[in-house]
Image (cartoon, rainbow, N blue to C red):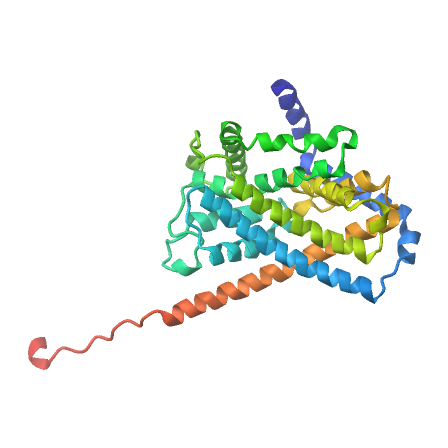
Length: 349
């Protein structure tokens, strides 16, 4: 199995531009083909006033899900034995989240990594997510644990959609990988791979390779439940888009949830366009297109993409504004340096 994986990695590495580019192009090509095939039906779709209200609610729920995601990251940091400052942690998460749309899809992780490495060094303790800086290995684990738990939490929802030709029960298997016996080597492998990627880009010094043999406090049940709450809120925003186009009746809500969980996880972990652009939509069409009319399903997917992108933009802007206000308040509250009085003339003599 390991030899086959190495051979596949070698083959994909020989593709011009790398596998990420071709996966992204294939996903976009599939979505564009679906758009072309359903363009006339899409143009005939229209939203009434209630539909627009559903989309507005979707933006609000998506904003709430981002805050929940930032809090879930803080729960993960606490599970690792760190002491996160909750407001600063959430603001850092929201401010950096928009960078996931930049080419490469790693810049939001890089921003969090650097913030954890420099916490407590500049004296602005109130704006730092941690009271003290982390070593490179610790910071990488703290950053990479969050998307790993998100993916496992989302896949754990697959069984709610039924058997699904054996796909449903498979969604429970990643829960076993969170046992410390397997989670520690998995995180070690992920951090070494990410460290090598950052070193190739010149974002990490060659001597900063993290040390192996992680010590984890146990099974990450509480961080997993926090990430599960985030995924459910994410689905709630998607459900608002489903309601906006009035296609909820086509399949049960459990099937909608299972299809969303699979597509969202694919957009998170499959190397494609930044932010899962194209990958989420393609997997959603492939998974639910046999049960839901393709034109309204495509409209739901595209509207959800617009809703989440708008929520990311508003959250990042608000977080940056709040961070600036906090820094300004901290600067104004700092005591001014005492003025030095001139020495008497006899002392200067």
